Length: 146
Ligand SMILES: [Zn+2]
Image (cartoon, rainbow, N blue to C red; front, side, top):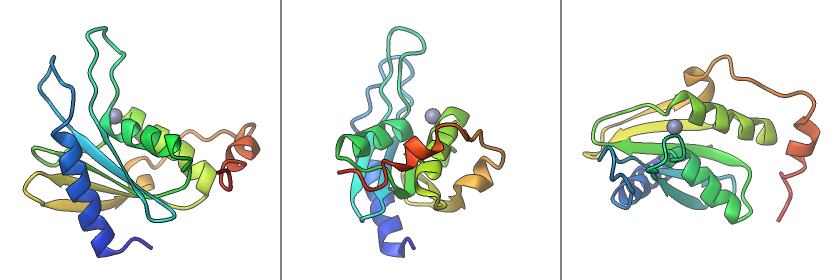
């Protein structure tokens, strides 16, 4: 259960992260924030690369940030842009991987910088995600990992 207060915090923290995005090529900055199952917030922002294809989306940066802190189970993720913009397919698939770890639905909050937002479920946005059956046991072993 994600509270309204947690949604408000996710949007606020994603907006803060957006200010730190590294976007010398496009100038198109995104900020994200993920909520771990135990109630912690981890921010991420767009990091572009001069080498094509090496950049990272804010959503994946937020997940990777949480993983550095030993978090693998997530309740919600918010992404903020100038106007409401949805996560790319690669990020949705990356998030679906962590659904397989958690076996719990994740909320995706898309927001603009003025605070307008929409709440979706991950599978509303990616209804036919790729799932592995051969690696799932190894993935779920991360649930209780510290
Ligand atoms: Zn993305």
